[in-house]
Length: 235
Image (cartoon, rainbow, N blue to C red; front, side, top):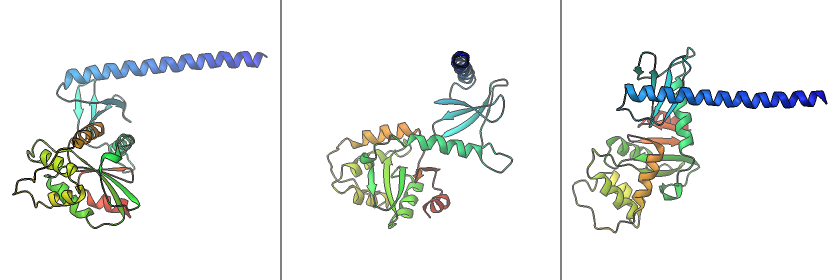
């Protein structure tokens, strides 16, 4: 009977300590966030996390990680490595970006292929690196690609090309034609916009990416046209 009373008491104490710890975490998050906004108001961010270094915090901004020191108000840009030669920045980014694809509407993506290996892709039809990626994947039979479009503002014709692809009766063929550059010097055929691009816009906003291309190969995030890494992941 006494043992039961002690357990309840300890349980209550545990709940109390957990609540205090949670409150303390909220306090430092708010404090660091306010400091960062004051020091770097031009940097938009979504999340702040503790880093392996005391007094340094991870600033999650889209698909990038910065390191912030509130005590000196310095922002560190670059990768954090362990003494074992592991990029802690790359590992954390992969973890974060891997979680973001869970709720993507894959049924609204442009699906290319039916292979056993899954590739989720964010692309821009006028991005030269995206076009290289299209060449890389063309003809492969081992992948199922789910392509989401994110036309960049630096490419003024890209959005209309995306709308044309997504509204086409044969969107995969339209994609191949556009990505091969065959329509660069010609006006697009007339088409009825089906509005699917708006879904793609919301999906890429959810992912937080700010450039193209981006890939998730079997769930592993690969920023940029890193074909060496993609090839290794597809083996």
